[in-house]
Amino acid sequence: MNPRQGMRWPNISAQTELAQVKVAGTAPLSSLSQPARQGTQGVPQAVSSVSATKRILTATTCRVTVSFARNPGDPYFTQAKAYLKLGSGVPSLVAEGTTSPLTFVTARTGVPATVFVVSIGNWGSTALANSPGKALSLA
Image 1: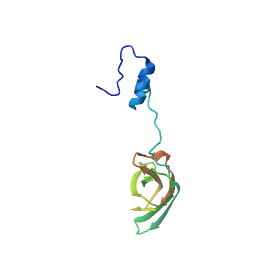
Image 2: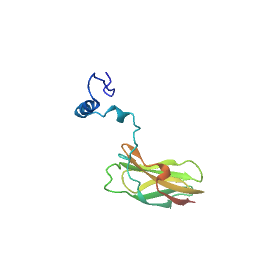
Image 3: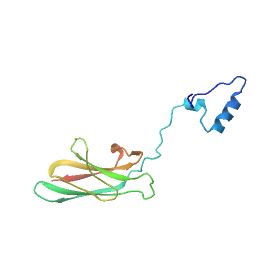
Protein backbone atom coordinates (compact mmCIF):
# COMPACT_ATOMS: atom_id res chain seq x y z
CA MET A 1 0.00 0.00 0.00
CA ASN A 2 1.31 3.43 -0.96
CA PRO A 3 1.05 5.82 2.05
CA ARG A 4 0.60 8.79 -0.31
CA GLN A 5 -2.34 7.20 -2.10
CA GLY A 6 -5.73 8.03 -0.64
CA MET A 7 -8.22 5.38 0.39
CA ARG A 8 -11.95 5.70 -0.16
CA TRP A 9 -13.98 4.14 2.63
CA PRO A 10 -17.70 3.70 1.98
CA ASN A 11 -20.02 6.11 3.78
CA ILE A 12 -17.21 8.42 5.04
CA SER A 13 -17.36 12.12 4.25
CA ALA A 14 -14.50 14.18 2.86
CA GLN A 15 -14.34 16.05 6.20
CA THR A 16 -13.71 12.78 8.05
CA GLU A 17 -11.01 11.81 5.53
CA LEU A 18 -9.29 15.16 6.06
CA ALA A 19 -9.37 14.71 9.83
CA GLN A 20 -7.86 11.24 9.45
CA VAL A 21 -5.08 12.66 7.29
CA LYS A 22 -4.31 15.38 9.85
CA VAL A 23 -4.11 12.81 12.61
CA ALA A 24 -1.85 10.59 10.53
CA GLY A 25 0.47 13.54 9.84
CA THR A 26 0.42 13.31 6.07
CA ALA A 27 -0.79 15.76 3.45
CA PRO A 28 -4.18 15.29 1.83
CA LEU A 29 -4.20 13.99 -1.73
CA SER A 30 -5.32 17.32 -3.20
CA SER A 31 -2.12 19.05 -2.00
CA LEU A 32 0.06 16.29 -3.46
CA SER A 33 -1.25 17.02 -6.93
CA GLN A 34 -0.18 20.68 -6.72
CA PRO A 35 3.28 21.56 -8.05
CA ALA A 36 5.89 21.96 -5.35
CA ARG A 37 7.29 25.44 -4.89
CA GLN A 38 11.03 25.73 -5.03
CA GLY A 39 12.31 27.67 -2.05
CA THR A 40 15.67 28.95 -1.03
CA GLN A 41 15.87 27.12 2.28
CA GLY A 42 19.31 25.56 2.49
CA VAL A 43 20.89 27.79 -0.17
CA PRO A 44 23.48 30.21 1.23
CA GLN A 45 23.40 33.95 0.67
CA ALA A 46 25.78 35.41 -1.89
CA VAL A 47 29.04 36.82 -0.55
CA SER A 48 29.74 40.54 -0.89
CA SER A 49 32.64 43.00 -1.09
CA VAL A 50 34.68 40.86 -3.48
CA SER A 51 38.15 42.23 -4.19
CA ALA A 52 41.13 40.70 -5.98
CA THR A 53 44.81 41.60 -5.94
CA LYS A 54 47.70 40.16 -7.90
CA ARG A 55 51.35 39.71 -6.96
CA ILE A 56 53.83 38.83 -9.70
CA LEU A 57 55.89 35.75 -8.81
CA THR A 58 57.86 35.12 -12.00
CA ALA A 59 57.86 36.31 -15.58
CA THR A 60 55.06 33.85 -16.33
CA THR A 61 53.09 33.41 -13.08
CA CYS A 62 51.31 35.50 -10.48
CA ARG A 63 49.53 34.89 -7.18
CA VAL A 64 45.95 36.16 -6.93
CA THR A 65 44.33 36.82 -3.56
CA VAL A 66 40.55 37.07 -3.51
CA SER A 67 38.86 38.62 -0.48
CA PHE A 68 35.15 38.56 0.26
CA ALA A 69 32.68 39.15 3.07
CA ARG A 70 29.95 36.73 4.04
CA ASN A 71 26.99 37.13 6.34
CA PRO A 72 28.14 35.54 9.63
CA GLY A 73 24.50 34.82 10.48
CA ASP A 74 23.93 32.73 7.34
CA PRO A 75 23.40 29.17 8.65
CA TYR A 76 23.67 27.62 5.18
CA PHE A 77 27.14 28.89 4.17
CA THR A 78 29.77 26.14 4.32
CA GLN A 79 32.46 27.43 1.94
CA ALA A 80 33.26 29.69 -0.99
CA LYS A 81 34.64 28.75 -4.39
CA ALA A 82 36.56 31.15 -6.63
CA TYR A 83 36.22 30.85 -10.40
CA LEU A 84 38.50 32.54 -12.94
CA LYS A 85 37.10 33.57 -16.30
CA LEU A 86 39.56 34.62 -19.01
CA GLY A 87 38.05 36.74 -21.79
CA SER A 88 34.82 35.17 -23.00
CA GLY A 89 35.90 31.67 -21.94
CA VAL A 90 34.28 29.29 -19.50
CA PRO A 91 34.98 30.00 -15.80
CA SER A 92 37.33 27.52 -14.12
CA LEU A 93 37.46 26.62 -10.43
CA VAL A 94 40.76 27.93 -9.05
CA ALA A 95 40.35 28.02 -5.26
CA GLU A 96 37.99 27.09 -2.44
CA GLY A 97 37.89 27.54 1.30
CA THR A 98 35.79 28.34 4.33
CA THR A 99 37.25 31.77 5.09
CA SER A 100 38.45 34.82 3.23
CA PRO A 101 40.87 35.30 1.52
CA LEU A 102 41.24 32.59 -1.11
CA THR A 103 44.58 32.39 -2.95
CA PHE A 104 45.69 30.76 -6.18
CA VAL A 105 48.60 30.88 -8.63
CA THR A 106 47.92 31.33 -12.35
CA ALA A 107 49.69 32.20 -15.57
CA ARG A 108 50.19 35.84 -16.45
CA THR A 109 48.24 36.91 -19.49
CA GLY A 110 47.02 40.03 -21.23
CA VAL A 111 43.53 38.56 -21.65
CA PRO A 112 40.91 40.36 -19.53
CA ALA A 113 40.13 38.31 -16.41
CA THR A 114 37.29 38.21 -13.90
CA VAL A 115 37.22 36.34 -10.58
CA PHE A 116 33.81 35.21 -9.26
CA VAL A 117 33.07 33.95 -5.74
CA VAL A 118 30.27 31.39 -5.35
CA SER A 119 28.71 30.61 -1.95
CA ILE A 120 28.37 26.88 -1.27
CA GLY A 121 26.02 25.16 1.18
CA ASN A 122 25.07 21.58 1.97
CA TRP A 123 21.86 21.84 -0.06
CA GLY A 124 22.86 24.13 -2.90
CA SER A 125 24.91 27.09 -3.98
CA THR A 126 24.46 30.53 -5.45
CA ALA A 127 24.43 30.49 -9.23
CA LEU A 128 27.69 31.52 -10.86
CA ALA A 129 25.77 34.00 -13.03
CA ASN A 130 24.39 35.67 -9.86
CA SER A 131 27.62 35.58 -7.85
CA PRO A 132 29.72 38.72 -7.38
CA GLY A 133 32.90 39.11 -9.36
CA LYS A 134 35.86 41.44 -9.77
CA ALA A 135 37.72 42.33 -12.97
CA LEU A 136 41.47 41.87 -12.75
CA SER A 137 44.57 42.31 -14.91
CA LEU A 138 46.89 39.31 -14.95
CA ALA A 139 49.55 40.98 -17.13
